[in-house]
Amino acid sequence: MRTRLLLVAAGLAVLSAAACTAGTESAPAIPSAGSTPDQKPVTITMWHGFSADNELKAFDDALAGFKQKYPWITVKTTKAIQDDQIIQSARGGNPPDVAMSFTTDSVATFCKTGIFQDLKPFLAASKIDESIFPKVIAEYTQYQGNRCVMPMLADSYGLYYNKKLMKGEQPPKTLSELAALTKKLTVRAADGTIKVAGFVPHSQMYENAPIHTGTMVGAKWTNPDGTSAVASDPAWKQLMTWQKDLVDWFGYDKLEKFRKSMGDEWSADNPFMKGKVAMAIDGEWRNAMIAADAKDLDYGTAPIPVADDKPQLYGGGFIAGTVVGIPRGAKNPEAAWDLVKYLTTDTDAVVNLSNALRNVPSTLPALQSPKLDKDPNFQTFLDIFANPSSATLPAQLNSVFNQQTLQEAQIKWESGRAPDLDALLADVDKKINDKLKLTSGN
Image (tube, rainbow, N blue to C red; front, top):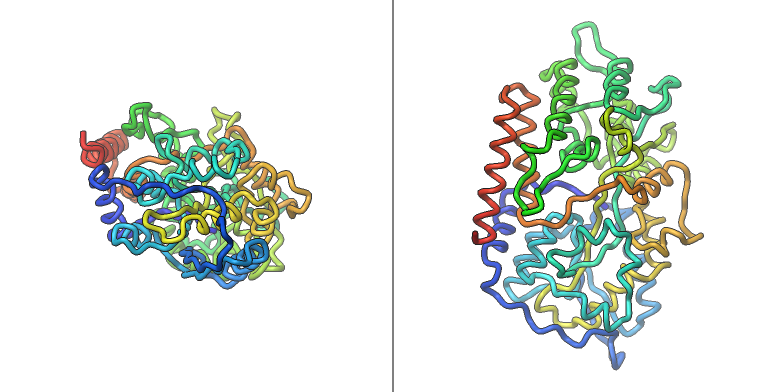
């Protein structure tokens, strides 16, 4: 599972269009919520985002378990699906029966526009108590009281470190410790070219997007009224100042040259797995990738470092996850609900998927299951998930746009192209708030 920032312009356009037309299309009537009543053979379709071989096998195994429990339901799947495809299919009247999204960025749009059906009637008919889900999950699986998707495993973010490159050093707990250790562990050639980086600090490095690093300083995205809090929350300035100081120490051009020489994040050539980076922020899934492609790597995991003046944040991190639901216009909603319910609330199914994909279970019973594999490096992410300092980005309109706007500003700042940070962050607020007015109709 991968929770990624969507930066594709076409996807943004579709999401924006969907949000702008909210209220112009009424959601269809919810069918009778419950399990398939007559158990007549039925075939349902499901779209999902899995594409890697290990992911596809794990998910096929999960569907085999579903088939054993619901032998009258056959599931036909389509892989590597993106959010804009789901939105377009529902708007065109030809959606799958079940759809899964790797990102929570579209949940507000899914719920507000009725792209996905409200699942509360299904939950009530099945007598499922939503308290089986950890509280943080509720923030990204519903919007304004409408739960239109269910959580199917979760992601938590922490710090990976190469024990050989660390040379006996303990993983840092604060930003100042991270900066000092980065400088100590970085290896340069005679001309200053970076050979090994202790840590790559800028926002363009894989999982270093502000949605993930903001938890290091406890930064807020929005005010209570939904407007942007980026300029008014000093935590963002604190994070970006720390980050740029370290970028400047490397030299932006040298750091960019090093970053662009790296292998693909999702391949065996990932620089952490190749010993080119001593410490990296990443999700729990990296454990499975290391086991598959870098078996000899001696590594450890820890919570991400936090601001020196906010030690209470240590132990937490960013939380998100995969979501799944029933699109508007699904032809077999009752059988679709059987599949959604199985994948998201059946304890053994959740545990088996977690063990196979090395993602965090998304229900409390699954987290407590003795069948859950808990090696020390994976346990770190279970602990982060359960830590009260962990945070998520609650479902909100324009989530992708908001994140992209801040990251674009951060790139300008770290590269030296925008020297006035206060003015830069004020401009981020303006762009986000202008977009909010447009999409909310205010």
